[in-house]
Image 1: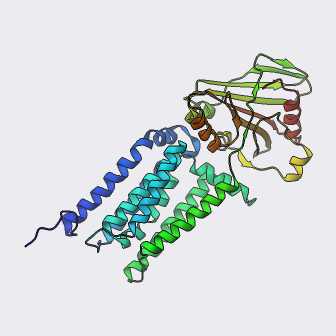
Image 2: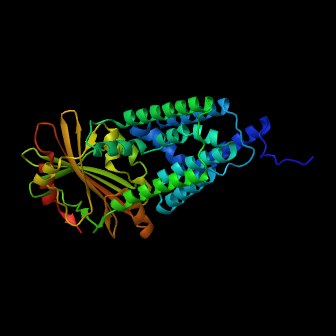
Image 3: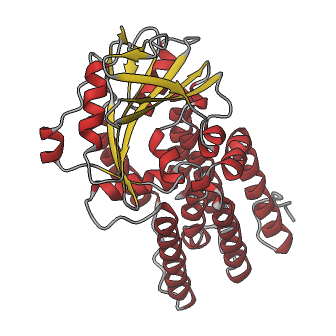
Length: 385
């Protein structure tokens, strides 16, 4: 009687060994990003409950493995395209220094491993687990909130969006389980999985091609000038959320500039030698209760926010009766950008350069125009090119 390879038969011992191997793959793949994830769960208001989605992902996986018996006695080839795609995402994350891509790739590798080792039925039924796992990652809620705001629909916060997606993922899993129990679950083959991944990759490539990062000349505020034109400046304390979000930075400074007729503008300056210490200001504002959205095109055309030579991003928000208008950019000695992907790319193009974040905003709660106030400050401010 010939001996069978240890992991190629699926008696009780073989199933447990394969499940354990999947868990080891997940832990090993997530390990490099774990400190980033845990720090965001502890310090970011938008990610405080991220751990809950990871618990749901693991609970769903345990439920599937408890209810479904793996039926394959060898590696399922349909898992290879998933594994290759996940590894490519992870490689792109390493090259561009994007932790979110590295973490998402880790979840994809674990899902592909479960498909390979435990069969197509298990792989399909585990689909909610990587979706829930992605919802647990930092900045995902903020990204969902920003994408939703671009649609112009009724504002929905990051917590509600993540909860809706989690419910949808679990509902999809319940439908897949129902189909499986009635033996109606179709099992895609390697070719079908490859075509689906190719279509998704092509769509993602088009989105990136139509939204490339923009670069401009370096730009900074002359911080020695506390008075210029009608404006007078003073240092003010940073908020707790700003302190948490930029805790690793080399310097965190916040200034208030005002005029005698009551106009006020705040300037947040963050200096860092590590691009991971810099985040999009919308992330901090969303965690502080602001609902971020774009101003109508007519309003932006009537009150443009012109910056000399910088590649910058505008933002508008509301919190109760308050209205906010802002502009921000990241600057290094060689160039500026308002895109986080551009910031990561710049860190690869010029390793070792220090970076600064400039966030300039005006808030009005009395029915005035914060954009008009901000536009006047940008026109009068002493810029260093």
